[in-house]
Length: 172
Image (cartoon, rainbow, N blue to C red; front, side):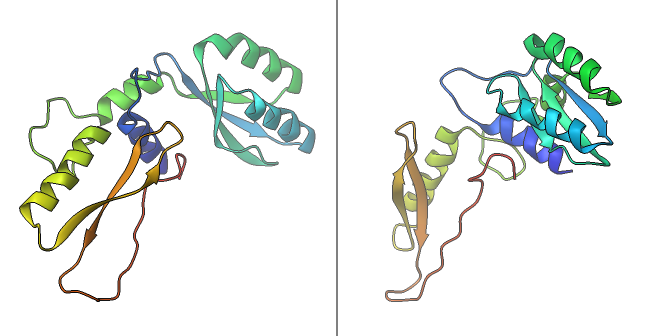
């Protein structure tokens, strides 16, 4: 279930250019020795092409997403460490496409994925709709310089408050 959530999170990310995962494969790898797990874990140090969904561990299945341009390297490493593996997901993008909405969503809801701009517009609309109770706030800026927006909800002055955050770590 959490794997679907990860994939859906990927769908929801907004970048200057839409990221796609065409022909990315996910492999399940059975590591039976400490040496296999250690060698496999070194793939996590490669910045473009390998992404662990389940980290390597002895006598546990590892799940590793491999970019198409890294497949030859993956097969070579698997031949060296001699750990059994199988293709778990043939094409990650196809799975993302099945999870993504098929039609354009015209209203904001919690059943579909929205871009950051649409989410921020919804927060602004809430503040306009309930000006005496909802206020948009900016908690800072992202690494890329975008505002980190939220809302403050208050029903009367000087009430104690709580802070709720979500979706801040990509692989949780």
